[in-house]
Every structure is written in C-alpha cells, then in structure tokens.
Length: 132
Image (cartoon, rainbow, N blue to C red):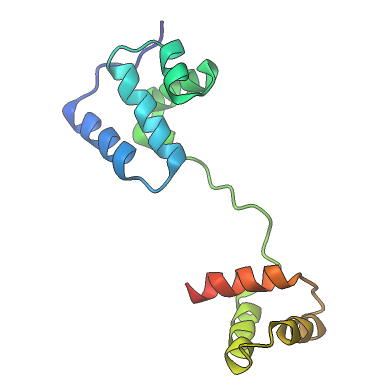
C-alpha cells in the first residue's frame, strides 16, 4: 500500500496552510490528500473522502515524494489565446471611458480598427480584466 513518507512538522505546517488558505481549490484538495495519507488513510479511503479516483491520489503521492510541495501545484492552463493585444485593450478602455453607455459602438469601432471580431461579452470580459 502506498503512503507518503513520514512528514516533518514543517511539511505538515506547509500542507495545512495550503489546505486552509490557498486560493486554488485544486491545490487545497491535493494538500488535504497528502495530509490524510500521512495520517495513515489508505488511498481508497482518501479517494472516497475527497471524491477523486484512486489513481489520481496515487499520482499526487508520487509527485509529493519526488518534488515536494511543487509537485502539488497545477500547471498553468491559460485557455484560449487573447483576441486583443494589451494596446488594443487599453484603447477599448479609453473609448469606454469616453462613451460608457455605448459598448456596442465601441465593439463596432474596435472591429473596424483591428479587423478582429468579438462578441459584446468578450469586450466586457476584456474590460473587466483591465479595470480590476
């Protein structure tokens, strides 16, 4: 049966902090799985508790053993590439500041100037990314 090797107090503290405070739900779940394994729970029981397949838990334990805490961090999954460049997004911001009630006009102007078409929702999402 596969378990994590006995954890040091500093490792337990790091995993506990990751489990409690990480903004990433994936990372929190992985930290929890390693802590449960350290307490002697079998992989099947951990899989039942956190509702993941036993093979996934096994992989997390292997990653913990080989890479430590870095093995529990997810690779970036950036999704679809951005439609507009930073400069284009800044122009959109400026235009919206000039005409805050005319998002449709800004969308049309952006399409004319860049040749790139995007839905009104995409324009809004880009605006939110810039404004936040």
